[in-house]
Length: 209
Image 1 (tube, rainbow, N blue to C red):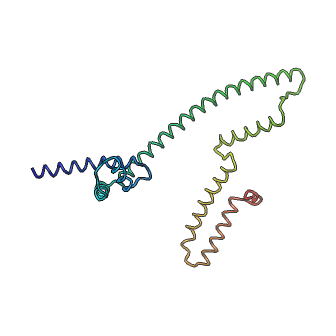
Image 2 (cartoon, rainbow, N blue to C red):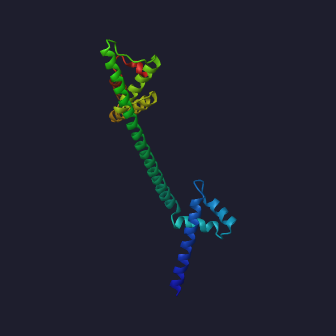
Image 3 (cartoon, rainbow, N blue to C red):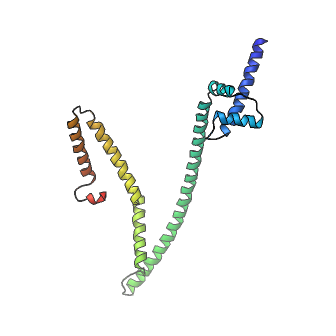
């Protein structure tokens, strides 16, 4: 009987600890045991500060929090990926529709060119300088996207910074084993200079500005 009573008390303590943990979790990112204690007193739940500390330690509340946050983050990332995938599919459909319009437009232009040639005229389009510039920009951007290249100055800078970080890390690892400090510094400068010349060949230093 004593053993059963002990198990019963233990089970009640576990149930109470689990209920308190759920309240603790629902408080949010600024949660604390002090806030939990204050909330318990507000809603009439009888528990002491020592009991909360004991529950938190005994039932590993911090580990449980990390696990729940990891699952929540994984769920958010999965939902975000699904949203992006849906967006990509929608954009692909729009692109196909626009491609159809583009093809129809090109066929119309080809017929106009053919008619102009047959009439002894030089084929031409009534496009303004602004329209021609816009077409050139779109063509360049589309080609860069298709080839997986950067399409803005910001993207170029991100690529360059990533390249520099990797190269400087490799140089640092390479010279770190040199014991003599002066020799190590000289070798570091030499390798950095070589790396910069490899990335920016002679005549391309303007890219740094």
